[in-house]
Figure 1 (tube, rainbow, N blue to C red):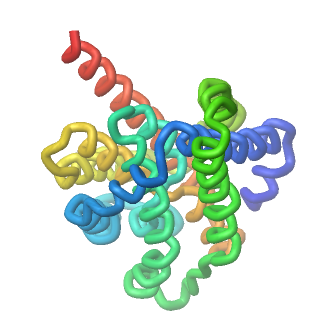
Figure 2 (tube, rainbow, N blue to C red):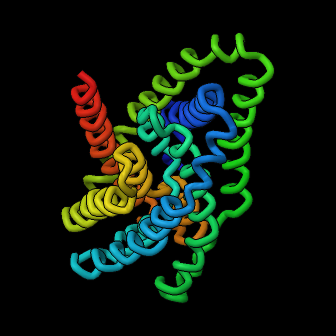
Length: 292
Protein backbone atom coordinates (compact mmCIF):
# COMPACT_ATOMS: atom_id res chain seq x y z
CA UNK A 1 0.00 0.00 0.00
CA UNK A 2 1.48 3.34 -1.01
CA UNK A 3 2.15 5.60 1.94
CA UNK A 4 1.23 8.76 0.04
CA UNK A 5 -2.38 7.57 -0.17
CA UNK A 6 -2.45 6.88 3.57
CA UNK A 7 -0.96 10.29 4.33
CA UNK A 8 -3.70 12.10 2.43
CA UNK A 9 -6.75 9.87 2.94
CA UNK A 10 -7.77 10.38 6.58
CA UNK A 11 -9.06 13.39 8.46
CA UNK A 12 -6.12 13.21 10.87
CA UNK A 13 -3.59 13.19 8.05
CA UNK A 14 -5.24 16.08 6.20
CA UNK A 15 -5.37 18.05 9.45
CA UNK A 16 -1.69 17.33 10.05
CA UNK A 17 -0.80 18.63 6.56
CA UNK A 18 -2.75 21.86 7.17
CA UNK A 19 -1.21 22.26 10.63
CA UNK A 20 2.26 21.77 9.14
CA UNK A 21 1.78 24.60 6.64
CA UNK A 22 0.33 26.84 9.35
CA UNK A 23 3.34 26.04 11.53
CA UNK A 24 5.86 27.11 8.91
CA UNK A 25 4.04 30.32 7.96
CA UNK A 26 3.42 31.41 11.56
CA UNK A 27 6.95 30.50 12.67
CA UNK A 28 8.70 32.37 9.87
CA UNK A 29 6.35 35.34 10.26
CA UNK A 30 7.11 35.37 13.99
CA UNK A 31 10.85 35.35 13.29
CA UNK A 32 10.46 38.18 10.80
CA UNK A 33 8.55 40.20 13.39
CA UNK A 34 11.19 39.50 16.07
CA UNK A 35 14.53 39.90 14.28
CA UNK A 36 15.74 42.42 11.74
CA UNK A 37 16.91 41.69 8.22
CA UNK A 38 20.38 43.01 9.06
CA UNK A 39 20.62 40.43 11.88
CA UNK A 40 19.97 37.66 9.35
CA UNK A 41 22.62 39.15 7.07
CA UNK A 42 24.99 39.35 10.04
CA UNK A 43 24.47 35.65 10.74
CA UNK A 44 25.19 34.85 7.09
CA UNK A 45 28.46 36.80 7.31
CA UNK A 46 29.76 34.38 9.93
CA UNK A 47 31.45 32.37 7.20
CA UNK A 48 33.54 30.21 9.48
CA UNK A 49 30.49 28.89 11.36
CA UNK A 50 28.46 28.43 8.19
CA UNK A 51 31.32 26.54 6.54
CA UNK A 52 31.63 24.21 9.51
CA UNK A 53 27.88 23.57 9.59
CA UNK A 54 27.92 22.82 5.86
CA UNK A 55 30.83 20.40 6.33
CA UNK A 56 28.90 18.69 9.12
CA UNK A 57 25.73 18.37 7.07
CA UNK A 58 26.91 17.59 3.54
CA UNK A 59 30.10 15.63 4.28
CA UNK A 60 30.30 14.19 7.80
CA UNK A 61 26.66 13.14 8.28
CA UNK A 62 26.51 11.44 4.85
CA UNK A 63 29.69 9.56 5.75
CA UNK A 64 28.09 8.60 9.06
CA UNK A 65 25.05 7.30 7.20
CA UNK A 66 27.19 5.17 4.91
CA UNK A 67 29.00 3.69 7.92
CA UNK A 68 25.77 2.90 9.76
CA UNK A 69 24.15 1.05 6.84
CA UNK A 70 27.26 -1.15 6.70
CA UNK A 71 27.17 -1.94 10.40
CA UNK A 72 23.54 -3.09 10.68
CA UNK A 73 21.61 -5.86 8.89
CA UNK A 74 19.10 -3.69 7.06
CA UNK A 75 16.57 -4.29 4.34
CA UNK A 76 17.24 -2.60 1.01
CA UNK A 77 14.44 -0.09 1.63
CA UNK A 78 15.63 0.82 5.13
CA UNK A 79 19.18 1.20 3.82
CA UNK A 80 17.99 3.50 1.03
CA UNK A 81 15.90 5.60 3.44
CA UNK A 82 18.78 6.05 5.89
CA UNK A 83 21.17 7.06 3.10
CA UNK A 84 18.65 9.56 1.72
CA UNK A 85 18.12 11.06 5.17
CA UNK A 86 21.87 11.28 5.74
CA UNK A 87 22.30 13.00 2.36
CA UNK A 88 19.54 15.61 2.75
CA UNK A 89 20.07 18.39 5.35
CA UNK A 90 17.69 21.22 6.09
CA UNK A 91 14.99 19.65 8.25
CA UNK A 92 12.43 22.44 8.38
CA UNK A 93 10.92 21.33 11.69
CA UNK A 94 14.26 22.18 13.33
CA UNK A 95 13.11 25.80 13.44
CA UNK A 96 10.62 24.86 16.18
CA UNK A 97 13.58 24.12 18.44
CA UNK A 98 16.35 26.40 17.14
CA UNK A 99 14.05 29.44 17.34
CA UNK A 100 13.68 28.78 21.07
CA UNK A 101 17.35 29.67 21.51
CA UNK A 102 16.60 33.36 21.81
CA UNK A 103 20.16 34.65 21.43
CA UNK A 104 20.49 33.12 17.97
CA UNK A 105 17.10 33.33 16.28
CA UNK A 106 18.76 35.05 13.33
CA UNK A 107 21.26 32.20 13.00
CA UNK A 108 18.42 29.66 13.21
CA UNK A 109 16.61 31.32 10.30
CA UNK A 110 19.81 31.69 8.27
CA UNK A 111 20.72 28.02 8.73
CA UNK A 112 17.20 26.93 7.82
CA UNK A 113 17.49 28.56 4.39
CA UNK A 114 21.12 27.60 3.85
CA UNK A 115 20.65 23.93 4.70
CA UNK A 116 17.33 23.69 2.85
CA UNK A 117 19.00 24.97 -0.32
CA UNK A 118 22.00 22.72 0.29
CA UNK A 119 19.66 19.74 0.57
CA UNK A 120 18.07 20.51 -2.79
CA UNK A 121 21.41 21.06 -4.55
CA UNK A 122 23.68 18.50 -2.89
CA UNK A 123 21.37 15.52 -2.28
CA UNK A 124 21.00 14.46 -5.94
CA UNK A 125 24.78 14.61 -6.40
CA UNK A 126 25.40 12.45 -3.33
CA UNK A 127 22.63 10.05 -4.31
CA UNK A 128 24.09 9.66 -7.78
CA UNK A 129 27.49 8.86 -6.29
CA UNK A 130 26.41 6.48 -3.54
CA UNK A 131 23.09 4.84 -4.39
CA UNK A 132 22.95 2.15 -7.07
CA UNK A 133 22.60 3.56 -10.57
CA UNK A 134 19.37 1.68 -11.20
CA UNK A 135 17.54 3.50 -8.40
CA UNK A 136 17.28 6.65 -10.51
CA UNK A 137 16.71 9.18 -7.71
CA UNK A 138 14.40 12.01 -8.74
CA UNK A 139 14.37 15.34 -6.91
CA UNK A 140 11.04 17.25 -7.12
CA UNK A 141 12.77 20.58 -7.74
CA UNK A 142 9.70 22.73 -8.34
CA UNK A 143 7.90 21.48 -5.25
CA UNK A 144 10.96 21.87 -3.02
CA UNK A 145 11.86 25.37 -4.22
CA UNK A 146 8.21 26.43 -4.22
CA UNK A 147 7.86 25.31 -0.61
CA UNK A 148 10.91 27.33 0.47
CA UNK A 149 9.63 30.45 -1.27
CA UNK A 150 5.95 30.23 -0.28
CA UNK A 151 6.13 28.92 3.26
CA UNK A 152 9.55 30.12 4.48
CA UNK A 153 10.85 33.12 2.54
CA UNK A 154 7.64 35.10 1.93
CA UNK A 155 6.38 34.94 5.55
CA UNK A 156 9.84 35.99 6.76
CA UNK A 157 9.89 38.95 4.36
CA UNK A 158 6.34 39.88 5.41
CA UNK A 159 7.50 39.95 9.02
CA UNK A 160 10.44 42.18 8.10
CA UNK A 161 8.11 44.55 6.23
CA UNK A 162 5.68 44.81 9.13
CA UNK A 163 8.54 45.32 11.57
CA UNK A 164 9.82 48.28 9.57
CA UNK A 165 6.58 49.86 8.35
CA UNK A 166 3.99 49.03 11.00
CA UNK A 167 5.78 48.58 14.31
CA UNK A 168 2.62 48.63 16.42
CA UNK A 169 1.01 45.92 14.31
CA UNK A 170 4.23 43.91 14.39
CA UNK A 171 4.40 44.15 18.17
CA UNK A 172 0.78 43.08 18.52
CA UNK A 173 1.30 40.06 16.23
CA UNK A 174 4.45 38.64 17.81
CA UNK A 175 2.88 36.69 20.68
CA UNK A 176 -0.17 35.44 18.69
CA UNK A 177 2.08 34.15 15.88
CA UNK A 178 4.32 32.40 18.38
CA UNK A 179 1.28 30.82 20.04
CA UNK A 180 -0.12 29.68 16.68
CA UNK A 181 3.29 28.25 15.78
CA UNK A 182 3.46 26.20 18.98
CA UNK A 183 -0.13 24.96 18.73
CA UNK A 184 0.17 23.97 15.07
CA UNK A 185 3.42 22.09 15.78
CA UNK A 186 1.75 20.11 18.57
CA UNK A 187 -1.22 19.35 16.31
CA UNK A 188 1.13 18.08 13.61
CA UNK A 189 2.77 15.69 16.06
CA UNK A 190 -0.53 14.55 17.60
CA UNK A 191 -2.32 13.86 14.31
CA UNK A 192 0.60 11.91 12.86
CA UNK A 193 1.51 10.03 16.03
CA UNK A 194 -0.35 6.85 15.12
CA UNK A 195 1.15 6.71 11.63
CA UNK A 196 4.65 7.36 12.97
CA UNK A 197 4.33 4.65 15.60
CA UNK A 198 3.03 2.18 13.06
CA UNK A 199 5.89 2.96 10.69
CA UNK A 200 8.46 2.68 13.48
CA UNK A 201 7.05 -0.67 14.55
CA UNK A 202 7.22 -2.12 11.05
CA UNK A 203 10.87 -1.60 10.10
CA UNK A 204 12.64 -3.68 12.75
CA UNK A 205 15.09 -3.04 15.57
CA UNK A 206 18.19 -2.82 13.38
CA UNK A 207 16.79 0.04 11.29
CA UNK A 208 15.47 1.85 14.38
CA UNK A 209 18.86 1.54 16.09
CA UNK A 210 20.71 2.81 13.01
CA UNK A 211 18.31 5.76 12.73
CA UNK A 212 18.62 6.61 16.42
CA UNK A 213 22.41 6.59 16.09
CA UNK A 214 22.21 8.76 12.99
CA UNK A 215 20.18 11.34 14.93
CA UNK A 216 22.29 11.32 18.10
CA UNK A 217 25.69 11.21 16.40
CA UNK A 218 24.63 13.93 13.93
CA UNK A 219 23.65 16.06 16.92
CA UNK A 220 27.11 15.46 18.42
CA UNK A 221 28.77 16.41 15.12
CA UNK A 222 26.74 19.61 14.89
CA UNK A 223 27.57 20.48 18.48
CA UNK A 224 31.28 19.86 17.97
CA UNK A 225 31.47 22.01 14.83
CA UNK A 226 29.24 24.77 16.18
CA UNK A 227 32.20 26.78 17.45
CA UNK A 228 32.95 28.36 20.82
CA UNK A 229 29.61 30.13 21.30
CA UNK A 230 27.25 27.88 23.27
CA UNK A 231 24.01 29.05 21.67
CA UNK A 232 25.54 28.64 18.20
CA UNK A 233 26.51 25.07 19.12
CA UNK A 234 22.95 24.39 20.22
CA UNK A 235 21.52 25.69 16.94
CA UNK A 236 24.10 23.74 14.94
CA UNK A 237 23.43 20.51 16.85
CA UNK A 238 19.67 20.65 16.27
CA UNK A 239 19.92 21.79 12.65
CA UNK A 240 22.35 18.97 11.88
CA UNK A 241 20.42 16.17 13.57
CA UNK A 242 17.02 17.03 12.06
CA UNK A 243 17.29 15.85 8.48
CA UNK A 244 14.92 16.95 5.71
CA UNK A 245 12.47 14.07 6.03
CA UNK A 246 9.80 15.97 4.09
CA UNK A 247 11.98 16.24 0.99
CA UNK A 248 13.05 12.61 1.45
CA UNK A 249 9.39 11.56 1.41
CA UNK A 250 8.90 13.38 -1.89
CA UNK A 251 12.02 11.77 -3.32
CA UNK A 252 10.90 8.34 -2.13
CA UNK A 253 7.43 8.78 -3.64
CA UNK A 254 8.92 9.81 -6.99
CA UNK A 255 11.84 7.37 -7.11
CA UNK A 256 10.73 4.28 -5.16
CA UNK A 257 6.99 3.80 -5.66
CA UNK A 258 5.53 0.64 -4.20
CA UNK A 259 8.45 0.14 -1.82
CA UNK A 260 8.86 0.76 1.92
CA UNK A 261 11.33 3.64 1.66
CA UNK A 262 8.55 6.08 2.59
CA UNK A 263 7.57 3.97 5.60
CA UNK A 264 11.15 3.95 6.86
CA UNK A 265 11.34 7.73 6.39
CA UNK A 266 8.20 8.24 8.46
CA UNK A 267 9.72 6.02 11.16
CA UNK A 268 12.74 8.35 11.20
CA UNK A 269 10.38 11.29 11.67
CA UNK A 270 8.96 9.53 14.72
CA UNK A 271 12.46 9.23 16.20
CA UNK A 272 13.73 12.67 15.23
CA UNK A 273 11.56 14.94 17.38
CA UNK A 274 11.84 13.50 20.95
CA UNK A 275 15.65 13.77 21.38
CA UNK A 276 15.66 17.29 19.95
CA UNK A 277 12.77 18.28 22.18
CA UNK A 278 14.60 16.88 25.21
CA UNK A 279 17.87 18.50 24.14
CA UNK A 280 16.19 21.91 23.74
CA UNK A 281 14.42 21.63 27.10
CA UNK A 282 17.65 20.66 28.88
CA UNK A 283 19.62 23.49 27.29
CA UNK A 284 16.96 26.05 28.20
CA UNK A 285 16.83 24.71 31.75
CA UNK A 286 20.60 24.88 32.08
CA UNK A 287 20.60 28.36 30.59
CA UNK A 288 17.95 29.49 33.05
CA UNK A 289 19.90 28.11 35.99
CA UNK A 290 23.03 29.82 34.73
CA UNK A 291 21.27 33.17 34.85
CA UNK A 292 20.03 32.78 38.42
